[in-house]
Image 1 (spheres, rainbow, N blue to C red):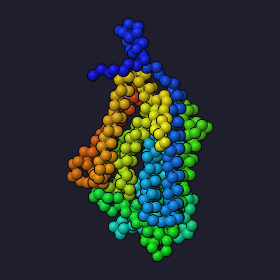
Image 2: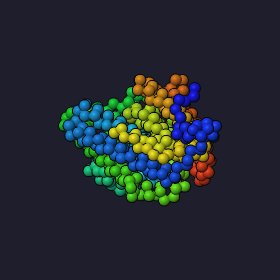
Image 3: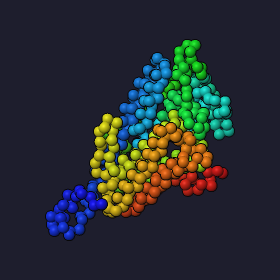
Image 4: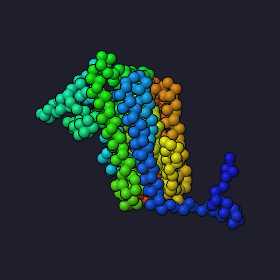
Length: 426
């Protein structure tokens, strides 16, 4: 069916005789495309900050007056905080300032026994991580590299400077969204059955009502972690503001800036999301490979990662208050060189969002992501692989966009789960 709507260019062509060839779109200035990108980054991180501040308020209320309702309010605030943050992940991989910082706020998976009590099935210290079952909340001091570390006062500085990646082990995640998630939900002991973590509100109760022991220290840890998250996001939002270091570095070299945009899109799309976050978990049938494994929020995590990639290409971001941030886009730039490729990539991004949306819809209806990862669950595998295949397919078109724009030194992150599946089981 032919469209009933004509662009201004088409109307002009008709007015000039009707047979004039459609004029190619005018290429936007690269600086304008980069400005839109930086504006979207600033808005996304600012929204992440705003929602983290709301999370902190909910956490403070939980610690001050523990109750089932207060715990649920904090969980709801955490879930809301993930929506803008996940969309910010498209700024990774191409921007060194983001990559150097990201591990503080979104590192995963984590050895949660470092932080708090865990089920006996979790196990204890291992050759890979001597601190895997430290339980710092229960211990006012511990030994690290021959030194006694005083943890009697749980502060943001202790989490950031001493505990996070302690002993050089990446699994010792002491800060960020997932440490907070664990403290709000607790372990998910359901395996590939339906159900998230079920930490009782009494883990924060006062006096004899306290469960799990050390409720005051658990509250102190939770508050310190959320305070640190707010501080970290405040810093990153400032880097993308006018005069900020991330914006300045991006704008300093327009060619390198466009490369950063496409590198972030391709790497998140292929190696990180399709590979490490989706295909790997399905291959291992392991719910521990879920990105938001304690809360069973992984379906949303995948969805908003995908949306962040689309945001960058289209030059559009809808803020948490409904405001649209938009401008000259990478799509405009590609269309000026190859309109068919732009249409192809737009279509593939939309197809991927539809596939990720199916996962999200199914999970919200009660078919949780854990269940999708179960060995032999054909319906779950089809849903997850729909997302994986969509992400891989759109990456191929992103690669074509790189070639069409005649860019060099562009390399996307890979994943053994996609590039060398046999290595996953070695």
